Length: 187
Image (tube, rainbow, N blue to C red; front, side, top):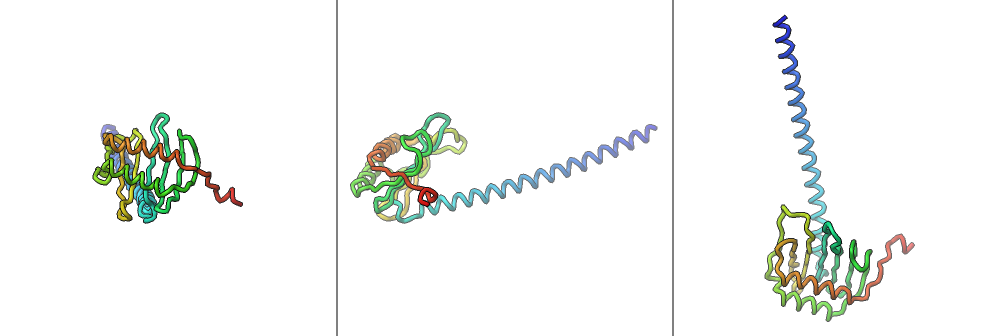
């Protein structure tokens, strides 16, 4: 009887080890698949974002991200020819997609304010990847038709960069915005 009991315990132990090993292997495979899927999604997103920033007609762009409160969330960009676009997402005076025509004076003011703030000399990122629950401001400025200088401002941003953002917010309100009709509205 004792040998039968020992045999049964050994058999149960071996079976559970085999099941546990299969479970670990399946979990490892699932993690690998998730990582591959996430990397593919990140590469796709980065490709879309990089193509936006690589547009040589883009003069300036600025966007604000969400927070847990009522932070404004929008995207604003203006091309070298003065065509300006605004997408208000949340907690902003206008929500939706809008377009406007900015004057050369408007572009010059952005350029001057950027120079005064030392924009081109600032770091590309004021961030901490461990802190994700704070709103961020992302800037992009093309200097004299050259490369795009981009700055991510989330934490410990220089005051002059924050002041520059406030100034841009005020100037955005000066433009005469018109709603962009979607393709569905045009039909």
